[in-house]
Image (tube, rainbow, N blue to C red):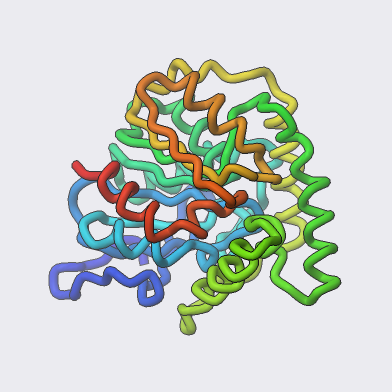
Length: 288
């Protein structure tokens, strides 16, 4: 289904109930979900490494979807989208642009997390006119210190998770302490709230190619972030082991007028651990 008639449909504001859709563009069938009232500028969500449509925090999406048209999508080669994952962030941004234009949008807001934030930065570099507002969470700039070490951290935490039969996100996204452990369990449980029409898993090949792209991004020349003139909200935990928290501060310094939130005693998934505080901030930031 490429276009759909929403005139007689009730507005869905629960991500667990968002319909699964596909649209074909450039020889790729993109899987996506949408919810919230249509019309106005949509908020497109750019997801993280090894993630599909089922990996978004419903306690952040649902409040945003109350008053915004929200769209989540699998980029090429990820989850239920066809094609092959490219081995560069810039090429991923090209695919995201293809998807957005296929839906017919001329202006968007972006909510991004981790790898998604890197893709968002590359997209804005090529198409600055497309984006009105930008949310960058748990992410870092091209050439950012230690981004090229993400693969090592990821493999280490996947192994630690396997040894305890846990979800790797519990190790990668949260501190292993009295606050982090229960927050991790609660987050993973929330991701299971959708029971019907769940997405296809991300293949090992797709995951490894994404890691290669992140390494290239980390080793590339630093981007000129002064070119990002959109209102920008940056957020992270204070102990991000995947994409060092110091990079959020670096982006904040280099993006004029940007807002920065660093949550205490939290890691890569700080916005998920503090979703009750962060969601209202994101809603306010994305207001028309």
